[in-house]
Image (tube, rainbow, N blue to C red; front, side):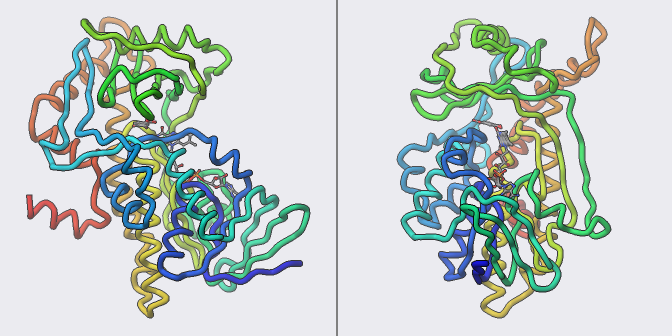
Length: 404
Ligand code: FAD
Ligand code: DHB
């Protein structure tokens, strides 16, 4: 059986795995990536769309900022819409930071192009991926082109998303999972039409949440709150546009329609695993934590994990083991803040099933919260600080607070 040796074996070629492999390469640390899907499938996957300023800086520092700088849309804030009115929250004015709209699909394309140029070792379409001896002498086995393979590594990184094989390889008594479900899902579409807004609109409407995002000056990305058991086949393009018009419409503004090129329904969950490390296995990104998408934190959290982990490996191979030993604690202290922010945004902006009729309590309480969030400079600054991105450690958060 062909056997490879490397320092870090990475399972999963989503944004976390691809970025980690690239960042390790930049520090001269050898890695091999194993991915169960074909490369075309990965390139076609449509997901998140908003990069925090820190994520943009990370990608740029790693030499991945060329197309991002040319095509990314820098937004100085977002709109919050409720009770038929749209309010702008100006992050640039409030905290001096911006976000960049640049799809996860584009981030992944840039990473794959960079890896191809560098001749990185990536096995796509790998079957039967399994990890072994994670506490002692870690190995990854898989089948590729019908041939069994094995990788011997110093470490394994599980960047294989929520449904991967790495997290389940940690013994149950060494792992605690914290989870919340939500009684709603997002129906998302991509449409070939110029965005009808200059910045993202997050909207609470009596019929449910709606959002207007974008991918480029000619492509719009839109979302609708739907029931988690809805079937995408029951949502014709006409029904989707009707619901978007009803929820997003306000006086004096029109939503442009165009051909729908992609549509899907995504369930929501909050999930955190403790610890993000067992023996010589480390988890990064969705393998270790999931947020509901309302705060735009999934992709950004994956990038933040990788930033910490790549730095920890570089320091480990330079003789300092402490950052790697502290990786899980560093991720989790930041991640719980992100969990709370994402849950807060989600609950504030979605209709809660059962909260109906003239005595609906949650809806009016949410309107009160949105009124405060768009009316108080303190509340807006808190939203701006969290939406544009928290620093990587609590230590630097307190420094930022003192500096403000
Ligand atoms: P992933 O992107 O899930 O990548 C994991 C990779 O591992 C995949 O390529 C997978 O094929 C591979 N893999 C899985 N199992 C194995 C195995 N056994 N062996 C080898 N490889 C394996 N976030 C937002 O902020 N906004 C959004 O609108 C949004 N939409 C989303 C829609 C969907 C359908 C999903 C699933 C997530 C969405 N997210 C969104 C979350 C965001 O996309 C994720 O947080 C982000 O993709 C995390 O990156 P990752 O690399 O950790 O995981
Ligand atoms: C997008 C997705 C999000 O989850 C979000 O909060 C904002 C934008 C997007 O896909 O564009």
